[in-house]
Image (cartoon, rainbow, N blue to C red):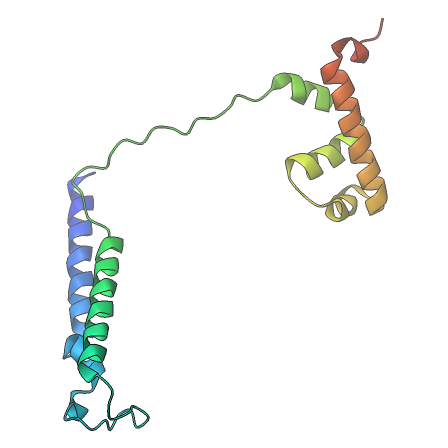
Length: 161
C-alpha cells in the first residue's frame, strides 16, 4: 500500500468518525429514554402501567445500545499499512477432451448443451436464442448430452474406420 493510499484511508476514517460524532444525538442513548418523564408518571408512553419497572427498561435500552455499538465497531474497517498477500484462487484446468467432444457435436446440439448446461439458461430461453420450440431445445440438449456420454465413455465410438 502506498503512502498516498494510507493517508487517504486515515483521512477517510477521521472524517467518518467526526461525521458520526456530529450526527450522534446530543444525549447519546439517554435521549431515547425521554428523561422528562422519569419522575414516576409516564407522559411519553401513556399505556405504560404505573407499576412498570422503569429502571429495568432503561437497563435493557443501555444493554441493547451497547450491543449495537460493539457490532458497529466490529464492522468498521481498520486501515493497515500494507495489505496482506492473497493466494490466487485454485482453478481447474479446462478439460480439453470434453471441449473437443463438444466441438464435434452438430451446431444445434452444441449450442443447446452450451446454453443450458454451461451457461445455465432454461430451455425456454435457449429455444428463443437458437430458434425453435422449448421441447425441441430440450430434445436437442438431451441428444447432445447423450452423444457426449457415448463419446467420452467409449472413445472408440466417435472414431470412424
